[in-house]
Image (cartoon, rainbow, N blue to C red):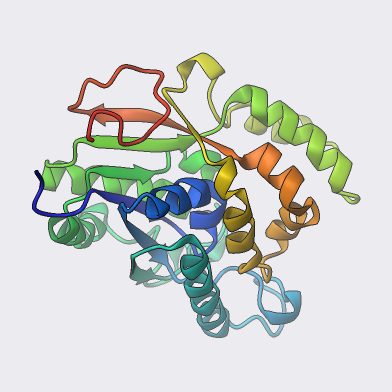
Length: 277
Ligand SMILES: [Zn+2]
């Protein structure tokens, strides 16, 4: 018997990523009595401000945005039943190429060893059995997501005691379906130009390369409500327009690729904790 509860740690870049990427597994495993630890690396200051003011526009105040997003994050954690929220509080680096990438204190500019040392401290404290973060491309190329991957992998190397490590991913079959639903619900959605379309085609993995499919449809309502807690962010509105049923149908199965494992649980598997209980 372990002398501590089974523990899931999710390392995310911004407030709201916990809901979109892993809201289902966080809610499901919390309901199963597993301790859930969310580490959010940045303050989300490059997000939309109150009243939809966009970063870079007059009146956009990153400090005020981060205060608002901190409250939204807490509300999302409450909905998902997350046991522990840990904030690294780096400055949001914005999208790739923005001046915020190189601003003092930005997560992207932080040396990997520095972020990893702080994360390793949390890993020592919580001793997660399962750690989840993004793939090396940060799923879609956002610098803070890439950096979250880098510090997580470095921290895991320092601590060396996590049995199972996963990167979030999406099956290509689902990305196709996603495009269809976007066209259905996004009134102002335009066909991506060829460069964008090529970048989109790189997102996710062929279905047969996905190791782990976790059915979280039972928790789709909680995932939706967690995302609704982040309604200040324009890109989330699209999902909320779908309503709970369609949202759950599209986003109810969360997929991962297992990148480290000491359990030898056979893949494909349907449980992040397969082989651990
Ligand atoms: Zn993000």
